[in-house]
Image (cartoon, rainbow, N blue to C red):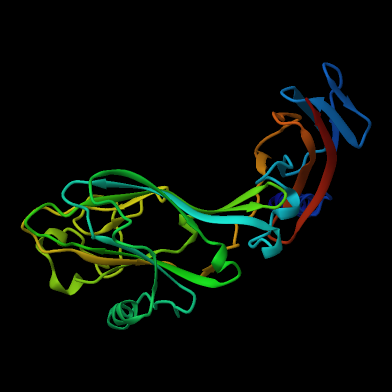
Length: 335
């Protein structure tokens, strides 16, 4: 009896394993249809729809994952791996951000630099990095005189077309000027490089992609108002408010914290990785199904007239292989 139970269990496990093996190697299946009527027509290849009218896509097949690219700017399947834009396709390029200065007298504290020949910092050798950033022959991108002299918010737009195709580094230098009053706090809001294409499409490279690294030039001084930062005081950031230290909790609104009057003057650099101005973030799709879900339909609305390519990517994947199929449809959106 024990032997029989063992054989039954072994047979069951073998069948289960075989079934799993077959399941793991199933081909991806996806068929897409479009519900017609109410201003939506579909001939099997082209969808015609009025702007503002929802398109209801219907699916058969059950892929593990399903992703949708609408074909609008930022969601084009053909650009899903694009990290740079051809220079000839860029009509304009600007660095843009807003700067909010709080407390004290912000005049002459900030300078923003750019370089086309900066070699890059090591990030783990403070002596070498601190000497390098101070001795490098930077070009001034925004001078202290152009930064605010009073508290408030100022917007900046800097032409970046002269640097198109160059590998550049950006740097921001914060250097306190007057210890008899509060050393200002500065918020950098929505910093990005925006490239407008000759086609009218806009691509952006966000500050979160710049690879900024702080260098706290006075970290060896063990300043009393920085003691709460117990690790990596030379290069680190914080999630709280620490005098003269950068907070990167939100890279759409990163800042360096203020310091009280009659404390040591703060001195910090913020240095980017090397990157090209015509870099861009890859286009991305919308995940509409994962392996835990069953999805039979999806609704999407185009608000602007034009011609788009709607793309569905169906994927099955496991530790052995990943297999995908792509279904593309022309979408003509009318006024």
